[in-house]
Image (cartoon, rainbow, N blue to C red):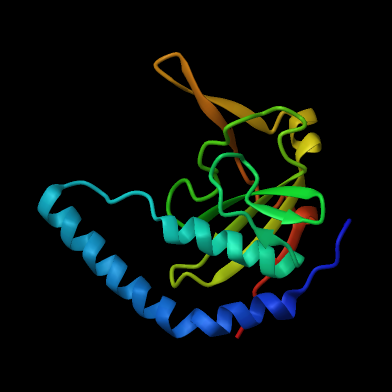
Length: 171
């Protein structure tokens, strides 16, 4: 690991927001359920989830969140660039990232995959060397109607255990 992990800093971040995030989770689930009942559609996307994942990775690595959305890099630790992909809950598809804009070996240095529980608390964080993912064929093209829409990574919790850098302690 090219940098020291700071789990206490991450736990302090979680403690700072845990009560409010729990209330938010309850309200969010109620609103999503009501909207689904009214429209028949499931609400997708939650920018809070992605920003929370970025904050968690920055806290754990001692890095800085980059405010710009212009590159795939979300967190900078010294000169190391980390792209962060975050999923909440255990619903279908939680192990798949949102689209990654580039599969170029020099686009980023690491891919962090953050899993939040249903109450928005960080459950686990994996950190993957980007070039290794590409070499192993783990980053695949996402196509919609034969047009590339970026690239996807699928987490395999058991296979990827060596890359787990944080796991929430059991209460």
